[in-house]
Image 1 (cartoon, rainbow, N blue to C red):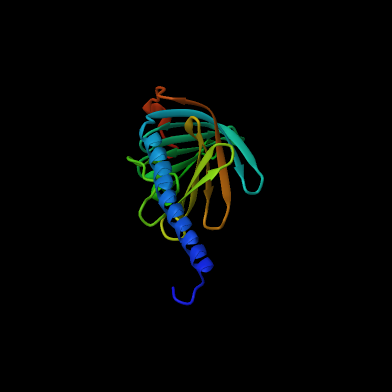
Image 2 (cartoon, one colour; image 1 turned 90 degrees about the horizontal axis):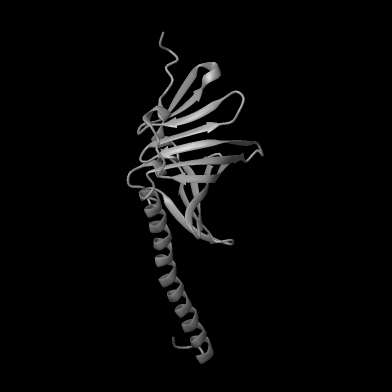
Length: 204
């Protein structure tokens, strides 16, 4: 570092030392949070919860969900007309009973596929994962993909004490956000196959 004064040299070394410390701390902290979240999903067999959903346009809805990992999730809205989302290992089905209509989408094209696989990986290939520690004892894990199949962002929020999933936020490629906040969670409760049975509107 010829030509650099002693004070500047000391400042450079202090800055370099700070960067080394920050890099050394950030990766383990990142890994610990992601591994903790993946382990949380691995330990969940079944879950029931009430939820409140808020869309970016300000509209709100409430309902109940039931999950049986892997692959099975049913979200039932307390709405008029009634509406339910039902997943299988391959499909996300949108059930509209009043219209006797069932519309199906590949589950791989939705962010829900990230938390319904076995095992759950929150660092999947082709995605960017960002961990943020927020005020109020919240760990936020965002999994982002800019384009292609499954494009969009899924953000998972966990309380730290105890470490439990409390909210997820889905953002599509158009920037439309939908947040789902969970309440009254119950784990390890019986969930029968009947709860995920699909209607057969086209059969006579």
